Image (cartoon, rainbow, N blue to C red):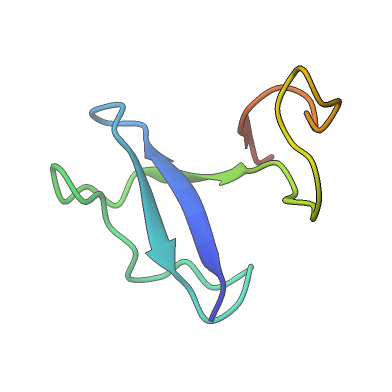
Length: 67
């Protein structure tokens, strides 16, 4: 199962959750407050090889909100 990153719109907490499919988020609740008011974030893609700003491995800005 893939690991997805979520943010809670109720308390602002960001957390990760194992989810069977990208479209299946029923039952996922905030790890901090238990709210079901969550948004899936789109994370950067990991790549093999060099990483970091001095090695040119940066994939751009951090997670973005999924719409």
